[in-house]
Length: 278
Ligand code: IPD
Image 1: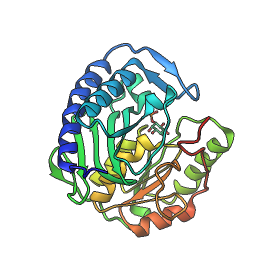
Image 2: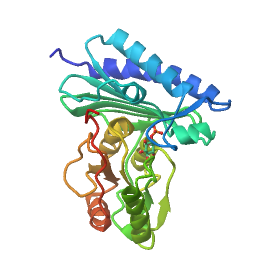
Image 3: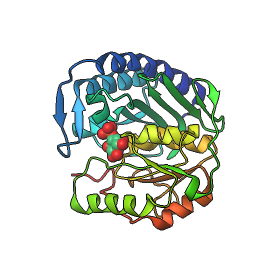
């Protein structure tokens, strides 16, 4: 496998994400063509498809040997397989429900994973002009300013994000509600913004102390994972143990202590893994 130039990959991705951001910024103000996917609340618009096409065509032109996992390509039947090869994992619009409602917490998420490790991560909210970036070993940044997680250890002082998700499977809904019921009295504040990638970026920013969720796909977490790690945070499986990007369970926190406290309180749920062929 040829050596991967992380800086070059980052530069090309950043440029394309900025261009894609213009499309999202314009489209969010307008009426959207909405289709549903796995459930009545799992949405896709023409902008999701256009942005994904734009990113994949630009990246594949610059890096013809690289592989891709894109949310809308997978929905359209492409395989969702993460190998050791350099793989761009793309969510063209994370928080599509927010985008549809013109709620400004929506972003483009692009992660490059090589040998199943995160190398580059970009999460861009073009509406709020927040560009979160990271290259492995070089720190995480918001609009060029270095980020550091809060370091909070005390659950009672923690602002915690979680998510309803797009599945309406009864066991999943019960898990979400049980976790809210159990955690709400114990945390300082409980929030939900409707975008897994934004949640992770905000933990890196130290605007929140933790995020957990069941059901986010690899394209929702691929870039956010690196942002949190590079900002000094923890990203693990909801049950504890290493984060598995295809397992669709994520718990990130500003400290190991906080991650463990939250993990012990969670009712667990296992969504179908990414990459299981239908
Ligand atoms: C969704 C968002 C949401 C998460 C869902 C995702 P999408 O992504 O990240 O926060 O709870 O599991 O599917 O569909 O808007 O790209």
